[in-house]
Each structure stands twice: as C-alpha cells, then as structure tokens.
Image 1 (cartoon, rainbow, N blue to C red):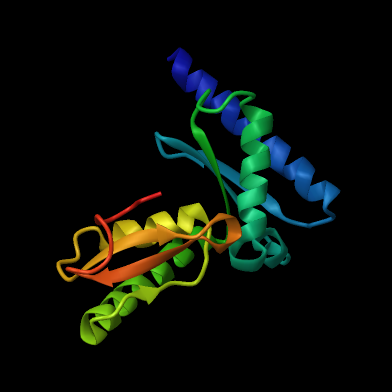
Image 2: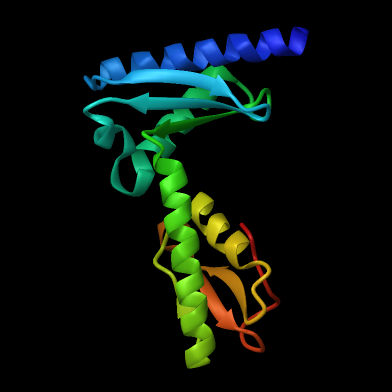
Length: 165
C-alpha cells in the first residue's frame, strides 16, 4: 500500500513538473499521467504536440531525462517516467520494427551488411530486439556518440552476434 502511494505521489509530481516545463517553453498542451505497473507514463496532447516531440523524438527524450532527474534525484530511485506525446513513441517503435524487417530482408537478399541511419540508444535497442530472433541476420552497433548506428549482417558475416545497447 505504501508503494502504491509513493508511485501515485511520484506520478502527480512528474505530471506537475512536465506541465511547468511546457509552460516555460510556451507550449500549450494538456498532460495526462498514469502508470502501467512498471513505469509512469506522461502524455502531452494538444495543438502544439509536434513541438513536444521534436525531430525524431529528440525533445521527448530530453524532456523525459529532465523530468526523471527532477522527480528522482538518483537513477533507479523509482519507476521510470516515460514522456510521450499523442502516442508518438508507439508509432515510432512500430515504424522502427518495420524498417528493421525490411533492412534484414535486404541484407539476406544482397548477402551484404546493411547499415541503419545513426539513432538514439533507445531506437537502436528497438532494432536489435526486433531482429534478435531473425534466422537470417545478426546485428551490431558501430560508431561513437551521435554517429552510433546498427549494422545488420547476414548470418555468417559480422561479429559475435546481436549487441543490444
């Protein structure tokens, strides 16, 4: 019971923090907050939700990081706070899984490694997980920092297998 109360308090605090940040950014958006047992999910919705998302979700990622740092002073102190806008994260995950499958097919047909565009650690992980059980390919991450990308190798090429970072 105490844990439920702590999660409810964290959920309300996280929603308040996100509302204040969006106000400072002069973005008119409503914030809904709920938890799914493992995470606190904040969803910003309104006419300016595109500004909340940013390019390839970069603003969402930054907002999520800041809200987590404000609500929980230390990492892993409480449940992860996920910041979303208009269901963007689910749509992005679906499109990354589709992309991974298409590029895996291309790697198998061409018998050549296929690099994916540089992306965030979260997006790379989605690609690695989407192809983890694929019979014809393995995946690895290559590069540093903003240039880190997934490379999809036909089986029998590449390094030691899937590298989910």
